[in-house]
Image 1 (tube, rainbow, N blue to C red):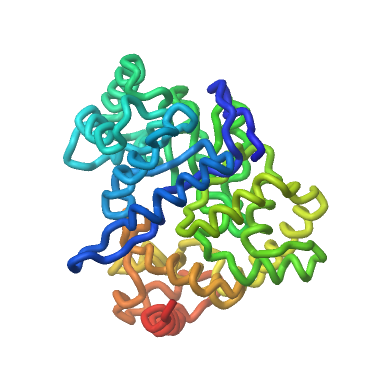
Image 2: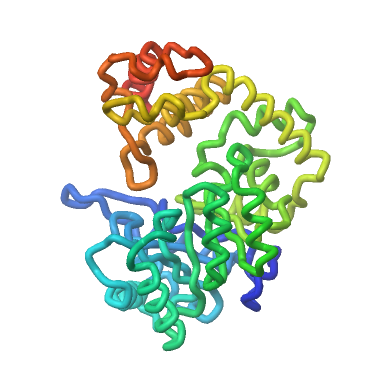
Length: 374
């Protein structure tokens, strides 16, 4: 396993991290529960193969992830770094929830405690300074070692959050398909933050396109996961790629890639970027994401996000990825409504610079994503 300096923390972090968001689930008496035996076997195998960073959160696996991670830490706690998150907006205060999470994890401290999924709204939050004081107090008392944040907003917002000067590390989206945070990751590194990226293989959804792209560009890989991980590892501003794994086989494959294979060469990265940009250009023929239409929709249908999902499906061939992208609308991460909320009023169409027949395409998206079976 290769290790990298994790910002200014003094820690050497494995370039593959274990994301405990997709632990194997089973059903007992009509309830979904984590298959603890299988999950712990996976986590231990990752540790055996050199992974020394594991990430969980309050909500993961219906609230069970932290408990299972805590059980898996037995005998390994002093060899690995634990990350979990505080979800602002829950009914419990910062300190109260942290103490509950420490009990669930069965540990006396969290190495990296993230503000979960913060964005521009955090900068303006009336309790922002209170949250920061609570975090600094918990750090002084040794309950947490480092203050971090996870992120799903625009890259320029990430830079503003970094400039608050309190964070040791950041967790954000970055993969072969979604490179929006490249500049922000470089900024984080320049400011001494450790950088962890989520979704390096698109939650496992980048199958198909990456392998085909590799073959077309003459890049030899054994799997789509290999190409996706090697692409991320080629970015020296990324310290750790956090992969949500759900089988021992995935753990072993990803660990082998992180341990034994060189990252893509600058020439290979450039070739892949060029191929992705060409696909993006084709996608832009359908929708540029300018959002000029959105203010005129009386039902707040997230038109551009819906069309982006359609582009993933139609241009990139990423069917499962497109499905999840579409059904993220209406969650805490993606505002607005899905295509079924369209009233067919036509208020949006006069404002589209591309002259897209928006209503017609929304109907096509509705048919596709409400009937597509993964």
